[in-house]
Length: 200
Length: 200
Ligand SMILES: [Zn+2]
Ligand SMILES: [Zn+2]
Image (cartoon, rainbow over all chains, first blue to last red; front, top):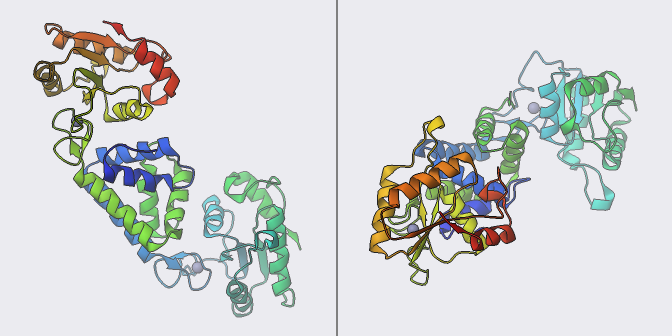
């Protein structure tokens, strides 16, 4: 029911409605905003969309966002090598990065363990983690997983996959409200959770 | 402060932040959503953006959205010819259209009269309205302007521009809450406002 009577505009509105959290009204506002911008701006946006989609690939080491073979963090020699922060998604790693509370490297699982939903952690991501622990001489793995049943199960699954390796496994511990999500905490809370991490 | 460390993604996030009502967090969600879509979907979106921007132009008669010389409403012989609904923006005409409470034609001013903000109604849109009133044999002009000081001033300015013509000038009257906006009322309220319109 988003008819403007003008086919290409309706098609654009339908596309915008697919964006997360965007309804009919928001999609229409976006479309009219676009129609009112200079042509150059719209051309830039279209080009950025295509370039982001084609130029970005998973980092060969951590699974994060990369334009080259390695992401900027894995390519940075100043990042601490002995400690790896395991996250479910790239978004979670970027949230932690933005708060500036961690100077090690990341490992993106790209999934979580949730038997009820039929979800599993991709096994190649767990294999890659094992290899990194050995090759990079890692002394600690911090599990930065959401405080939910699925996060708990995922933490257990990761721990079980690396339990035979001589590595300390910790988990973000306090500050994050139960039922909450890593994407929504402030810097202070996340800093506390990082400092208060406990052995698993 | 939207750095993902990956240049094309950051550029895309900055673009999304320009959309109305979208902040840092929303822009990031949109970008990651796009990265997770199939390439074909992203290509379609980019093409729709460019096509909407290039294919859409103002309707020669009403100033609404058109892909041809005339918009779908002005091109529709079944729309009542004797009554014109004057709106500030294309968005407002589409809102009224969506509620299905009006079967005449529209006239988009493309601006409002607000001396304090230095805004004026484009004079060619007022000239075009005068021409239409004569040529189309219009018997009534409904001013569908927002219930605000600027809407009031704009209504007066339009009335003054056509006051010498033998046309009834009415205004959407009740139902629309003061301080509110046409874009946010429900169908019932708008229907009441349409039925309760009064002479100006
Ligand atoms: Zn990496
Ligand atoms: Zn038209």
